[in-house]
Length: 122
Image 1 (tube, rainbow, N blue to C red):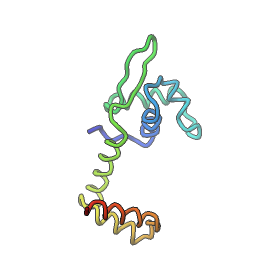
Image 2: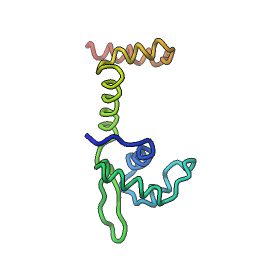
Image 3: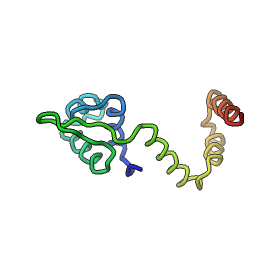
Image 4: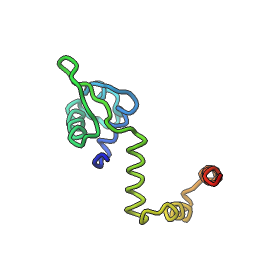
């Protein structure tokens, strides 16, 4: 599994998950402009992601093309498991109960959970 990535690194990963391979300049142009990041900031984040083996790169002339080394779904699965393990002893039921107790589940959320449970039972 990939080493945990920061929120900033995650923003770069989202760009690469949406479209890859990309140059560092391509990534810098696609990251949310509200972040106000320079191309150098993006290059630093790409370097960190390379060190964590979350992305890979290949030479394309005088530039590098970057692509994810892990699928978005696989990363989300690992992070979800870490969260549930750390905060809820590895059990999903206490997480759902926690959300329900704080009115964090909408009627649509509840309907989706019910449909999922019905599907899992069959």
